Length: 213
Image 1 (tube, rainbow, N blue to C red):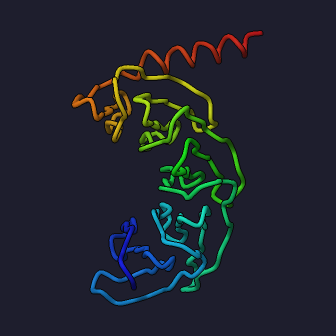
Image 2: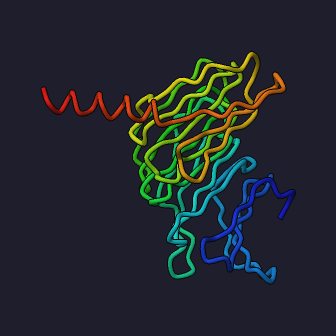
């Protein structure tokens, strides 16, 4: 492989998925044996992810596409090509259930997809998105952007919370294992820990009100 640009491990712990700058991805054993090749991208791979079952993976690239692959029976087959971005895709994230994945562009958009490649929702920021993290429940995700704003979304693409607090660009975000808190960090030399309970409770109350109508 050329320069390696992305990597992740399989849930079983016995294989590694690598992506390269020439658009090729590959599956390797823990002993360094080359197992499978994935050819489909025309530019460098920027991110990769493995589904919980281990028989499906996703890759994203500077060629503005993502690909969901099946690895069943030792064969690499494309399940879906994810399109719609005017710029390259920076990362991909598979939900814990394996039913959905999120892709984050090198611009202002993120997209939620089904595991078969159907588009569910487009998530939009006012500035380029820098980082994304999923909640362990699989019901939510957070994205942070260059304008210092963070947004918490439902798995259906609804805005649950807008996090204002940083003065300059956010650089990363993470979700605590309980899912009750998130942390965002910024170029303003600060990190902020945010409680999620008030936002989730407000959203649940609004849903109950709608059902009662």
